[in-house]
Image (cartoon, rainbow, N blue to C red; front, side):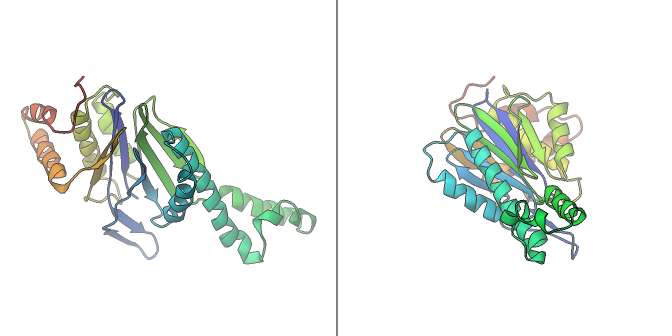
Length: 268
């Protein structure tokens, strides 16, 4: 119940990301906006955004950072694969605790010793529970090394690359966000200013989906680092959005082109 968005832009020299801050619990049923962003920097020029379980990613990121600490300038695909491995590791720890631990079993023994002593139908039932257990969290990994990259990491530890498409979104508002990029014929050659606006508009579009909050965090990732947009910068985007959504308004396009996010990059 959230939305996380990433868009490669500036001729693949930047990635713009955004997320909400809504926390949704199914039991007891409650929704609230939290102060902690769902956007976390996991490298000099890489961020990870989380959808789903608000707590599961904490151990996952801690495990990944221990591996990343020993690497010098890892590529974004390498970081995504490390997060995938950490995802699988932490998921199996939870499986052992919640499924096998109730019976006093250990995962290390389940496939070696227990088939000799456990009835086949029970073994198959537990094995099915292990294979289908949903860790309940999905990651969107975005960053720039020699060029921009977007990867997702999902249950039970799969990774997908969206570099060819150039954008992706996860969470309950994903389809609404993606429709903005599709409607605008978005591609990686779009300048950073235009991309920043489109990501903002995609986040606003996603807010009609259940569990997507109004609060927004945005960042622009380039090879030299991550710039988290200030409240003032997001307010400027909000003004442009309201202007562009107004009937018969055509003045917003030039204002979008004049946004300050391009840096030294040439506009397409």
